[in-house]
Length: 90
Image (tube, rainbow, N blue to C red; front, side, top):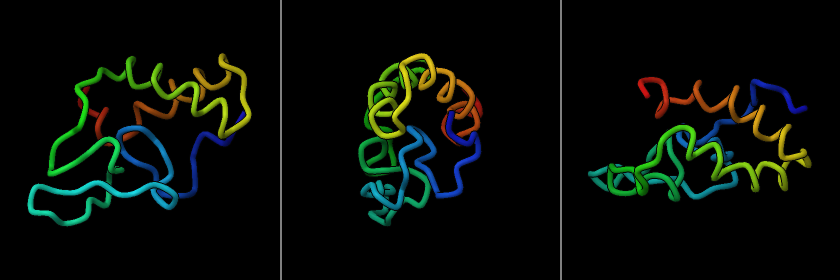
């Protein structure tokens, strides 16, 4: 099971590493320091998803990238995702 506190900056919506993902953009065109381009564009989220939907969407990528089982990936995301900025008030 991966460390539950990743050391690299993560997208605060989907938890993808920002170092390897294109960053999103704010409404004024500036680069978002919090969100990746898949999740955030022009100051708005690109998809209206619940936390549960985002977790389910990210399981296959987490399985592949972290070499986990589906259940391990789900457990990891269930513990990590609620700590991210987008989901703090969800």
